[in-house]
Length: 404
Image 1: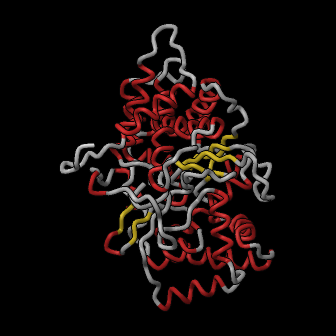
Image 2: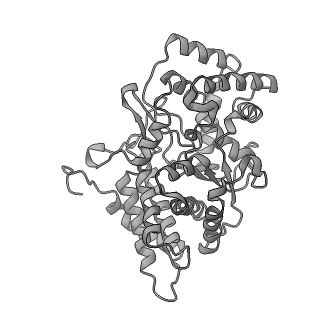
Image 3: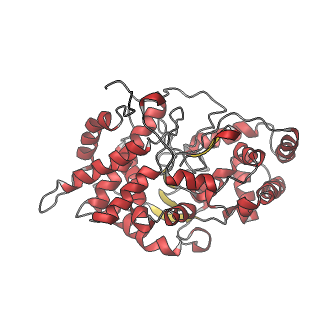
């Protein structure tokens, strides 16, 4: 998701969780949509005062605490705070806004830049993600239940993936992050307590101030704006020893805001099945160690995301998967195009719209090659095929780009 606000020197991608960097953290959240990409912006005196009033309730090292937590989950710091290695040359690639990025942009186009920046600095855009990762339980349907219109197709895709792949995915829990999470004072305070290590009283006061910021902009609707849950992601804490994460189950989390977007673009539940295929593809990667690669920075993330696009579409198109075809399959493939991004200098770069579409189509083509009785390729075989195809998927496609 790329919501460019060029005049304000901010490119907002308020997706929830970043793809894993080249070295996968023990606990990792890999999102369908590219994460936050932020250009430099300086707060004016009034906004700085608002931020100072909030951080006065936090420890002196609150920024380091937040950064450590984000690193544990796999969410990188914003690119305004650190240099990024392995930058991809943007002049070699065709890249453009999509209907999805325009939709995302429309969700925040009336929000004051100072308000956005305060929320970004404090990590608020990711609070629904953290809440779902740490506290979300599928049986708690009031806070984490799947949206009514998407519950059946999401569960169908998850259960189908669990039966389809040659790795054990039956321990993956399915739940949602809902649009009203940030309106729940107790849950906001609970996350602040985890992030910054403050006591209950300080967490409560800080949550009040954060919610005041959310209430200042009518467009944010007190935190109900779909921008805060405009993603879906896979999570694992396998091998983690940090007490915050140790023992947490593998999860597939659907963002209610992403469903709002798919509805707005008339892609709906067909596209949702492709999204779930992608996220369950990440769980295959976790199980098989497919994140390992000599690539670094944006190139490393692009590789894992395009692989998940390919694996996800292979599953939904295969006759022994969901068997999608025709217009339904096209909607799923279109969704991958829509969420492509142009963040070539970001570790969260998921691939351009063209690259994500090509990866998805390639996955469908592999499924179409299966002849009766339609055998399913072992995941390692599909992995090997993808690795050979990757250079072709990411080769320069700009009109004046040099030949690969």
